Image 1 (cartoon, rainbow, N blue to C red):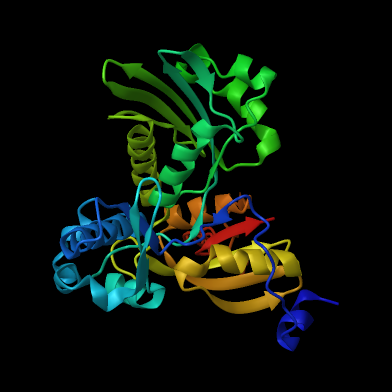
Image 2: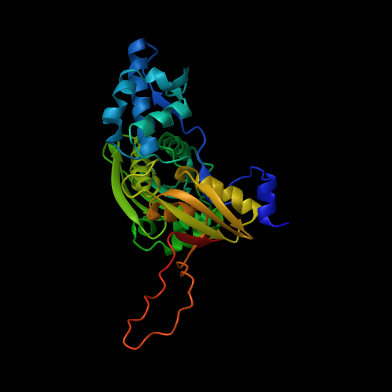
Length: 351
């Protein structure tokens, strides 16, 4: 049966996203460390949780101080559904924000947001301390600070097994170098969207790190520091999230570079349709037509944002489609030739 018939019959089922990108769970749930359960500690932790959430959703460190958020900074309870304490260690306050109220607030404040469908990142993380160097593996105790930091910053993080072969590969020389080819080859079996190479060192009373992020054709790098491995992990993943966010944040309702345009995708199946719907959620996508295995959407967003998002689904871009050639009469002597057909507007992709 053709895809059109399935769509018109409403027989689509919700299935998991077929791309490597992951849907971040508990994106609107924030944990902040507290020194007790006094009202003062709770209020201070609630303010930190709100700031963490705004940064997690926008990727912009200045967004929390936006004028449109003045009321919620004064009274965060208006978008909080519940909160509670967790014993730890360390003891923390867990704050659950209401997604609908939060999204409405950020939209009314004119703040671009980053949805919960985010690129998965495989971290090759080498800790070099007084007891030697060790590549952090998925099942090791040293992985827990990285997982907590990734959750705190809203990033889907994966870790290698760190078996003997990977320990040999994950050296300071490899992680500090500019050639990611060996890491890319070893990372293929984990199916992540990008890879993060981190060389963390203990120097005196602090931890420092040099990191490199490889995702798409735009490598990023930076340095971070922290008082302990947990603080360092949070600093690195905060920096990574701030570098990634501009590629994916979308401002609803147009404005700036975000405009209404068309998106054509070929090679569609029912599974692809469900996956594409997930990818296009931030772009207010509206299905315009279905023709065989080809669909056309109206979307709102910049071309760069759309390309970055569709790359998560492993779609390939196609050249613009030329406008149809219209038959014309022979040119009269001395008449100027008709202009060449121009590519049709919008982007074209295929699975």
